[in-house]
Image 1 (cartoon, rainbow, N blue to C red):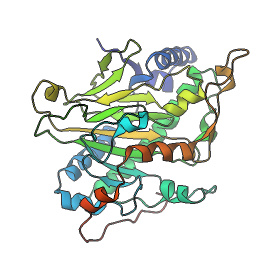
Image 2 (cartoon, helix red, strand yellow):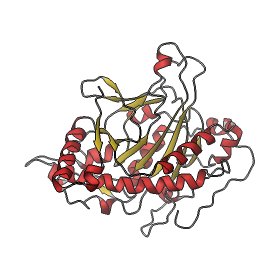
Image 3 (cartoon, helix red, strand yellow):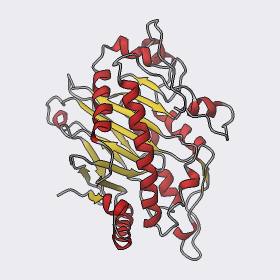
Image 4 (cartoon, rainbow, N blue to C red):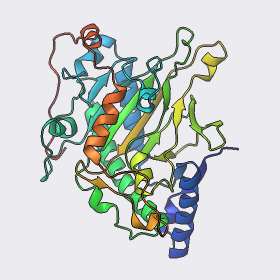
Amino acid sequence: MSHISTIDLSAFRNGTEDQRQSVAAQVDDICRETGFLVITGHGIPPDVIDSAWTEARRFFSLPLERKLLSRDDEPGCPRGYFPFEMETLAKTRGNETPPDLKEMFSIGQNRRPERFPPGPEAQFFFGENIWPFEPENFKRAWLAYYVAMEDLGAELMKLFAAALHLPSDYFGPYHTTSISALRASHYPATEKALVPGQQRAGAHSDYGSLTILKSDLEVGGLEVLLSTGEWASAPRIPNSFIINIGDMMARWTNDRWVSTLHRVVSPEASEGGLASRRLSLAFFYQPDWDARISCIPTCLTPGEEPKHPDVHSGAYLMERFSTSIDNSEESSRLLRKPSGKRDRGLPAGN
């Protein structure tokens, strides 16, 4: 039996008021205990999911020199292609481990907001996305998926508001100028035994409001740290998403809700075997770059003080991201892209 509960979101989206309150109460209990849940009944068309998934697999199947054409020249850019072993997520928790056994591709928002961030935050959050020329349907499929995830994220925040006994639109003003990101993580099949302390993705917590994960149904490895100190495998349920809250949501709720450590392991590798290829799509639903994250008053008992100081979303996310990525000159030199043009254009509005 899985330690991660499953919620039918359609009961909240389309149910009676009693059904909506029942789902909200379940979510409150889950977020107090693990901060992880599985949702079904989400309403995202299967073809939108399948197209984004298929194009990601095709991209990662390309030779390295063609994938490197989608790597940004600027150190610290959160968009484009990230080669194998470029990220070490455990560093965000202060743990020095070998690099994670994965490669990634990421896009962010490209709509210029009315409230525009100053200095380096402008390029970090609203710079142009980097689109590969191949596969040819990649850009179209990912834009459709990004929009669908934005809508689902907004719906989930309404559910979270109900779970915290807040007005349904409480979190809306914090998510008007999205700095959300869509990332595919590809874990190639292993060809040799792991070095001590190395994982496909090291133990970490996510940074923002919530994460919407489309996980591989064929190859497992995602594990969640329970309050007992045990690692539990995440369930693999067709037509579902795995949802987990991030550090900002924990701060908002004064740690009433937990942003739980999780990792991706190679079960076969730990037994001396070779791990199979694995893929995941993660949408990080983030508050606006200038959102001030303060403890929600209703999450404080009388006389209680907030456990965390206020933070601004943009600065906090930049710091956490930069901690995990290898931007050394040596890394950049070894992975220098071959000359060639890239499609950096976007249709109007995205």
